Image (cartoon, rainbow, N blue to C red; front, side, top):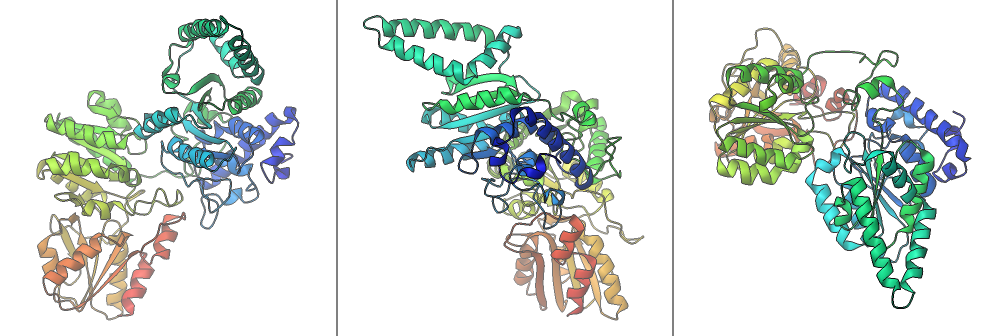
Length: 616
């Protein structure tokens, strides 16, 4: 790589000749496509911000100037330009670079950011801290138009506009037009207004007019009103300016010269925050990603020449999607809700077949829960499909708008448990714990596709209130033939009178059964108690193990407040006679690695269960 090989810090970007910047952009795109095809990751979003990232590091001085990326999944080029090119091939692999911004990885990463709509709030806080410390540095938030569907972004915009601090918000608009323009004249004027020369001339003109005796200020005011009316006629929107921002754009987000001019102009504005609106093409530079940016938003390994994934298989998300369509075909009350994740949660088919009963609320998970409560109050049966990591945002809505009011609604918790390479912001290790703390909440955790069906049928037709059904990313794990579910809420594999009991739930069941078989082959006495409904825990499941010598609970989730601790409490209440041990994730966040490696790390794989139980 002619240029990337020589970039060790962002300052090296400033040393390049202007004519070489498009070549640097081409090199960045080549590295992105090659690496993501091997490691998986977020491709389309990163391809769309290559020129923007180059312009940012050319016009600002990171880390003194703070560049804060919303979500962080679009930071790959940022990593290439901040000294991590030589390690970039390790991205999303164990002990390698994170797929998101990560402060412990680089001083150029200001926050760990894996969730949406947070950047403006973060940037405003940094900007005010700079102001109080008399720092002259600039804070920049980069946020996509999709993230502006999240309420937190508007709370931040509202506050930022009133503070008048040195802050630049870059709106990366790659799908919708926030501020429509009319024809080529508006586009031309948007570029002109974004140039430093125009801004300086405008400021000088206003200053001269204001110093003319008697009529100067009046002339300046008239000029301002005429300009404002003309601009409103062209752009049809002053939303951001009404909030207190200086609006600039929209401009071409793939034209580095225009971007640099606009950023330089934005730096000159010191009296109010600036919103710079740029238009980009998601997936730019890779035909397959441009044609289908949703498919290439987050991808597994793929063939560069065909764009096809290297492997295909059914998974829990797809099974859920098929199941919910089947149930909806027989019950017109059933509707589906998603927060901008119809593809990831398996709801694309439902979207096509039942458009009147499909609701995509955008990146607004809190609204999705309360909206679902409204649907339920109206007599429908809403199913809100959401990743475990994003459900974290909905705690108050689940409590206040859901369970407290006993609304019959179902939360389909996708990606529960270890998720893998996306890392600490995406691991689904907390949902069982925080849902477990909510009064009247019911939680199911099926271990295979057949149980997934049982859980949804139970939740829709036999339960009331709010029911969460949590299932993992990926495929079901194979368990021995002949193993059946003996009870709606739990089952026991092996001799019920065994001296020792392994307790677990979800996909961990398959590992537990295999370890149990090995232990019994060694002459030990073990059985497995598998919970399908993990809240409330069936009293008969507790009674079944009261006389065991040892009970070991293996939980693919956080220990504190989890199901294993609830089970321990019930054993204590029922005067259990044996020893009890919990194997789970202790007080820590789970770093990125493949799911199989995470099972090994936390002793939740077959060998780990076997080893721990052999020590008894």
